[in-house]
Length: 154
Image (cartoon, rainbow, N blue to C red; front, side, top):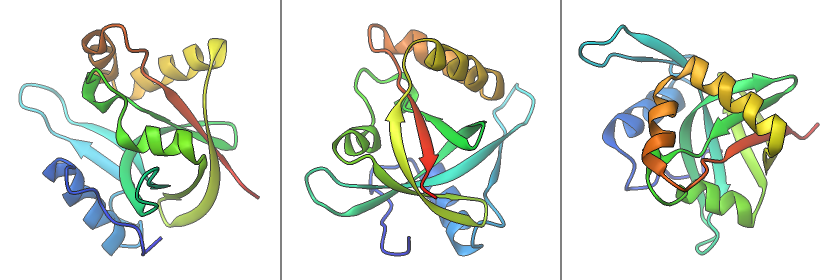
């Protein structure tokens, strides 16, 4: 996954987190501790998702919080509650074959958007490990925030 680039428009904290994750080979950065003023510290697991740009064909890497569902992983395409989907999600829609790094483990995966009861179950799980997703959902208005299942390719 070394050929992948971090998007230049990522917030600095995400760039710093991804740099730490990459430089350590995944031994540092897999667990990310959030320290927001006035709130208790929260530690959330993070993975690195690499997609292929739908326009450029370039490889783009994104650090994302994740959950587990059986042998699969899942991530939330929240973009902080913005009215549009994040670029990585649009890339994944165009090409669902992705690379992921979870801690020190690197693997290929196939991405798909969860629907119906599966989406609800995974969304509830995501809100339990990262409660701000509930606020992002309100902020997103009419946009349903996608829940993306990453199925490792064996």
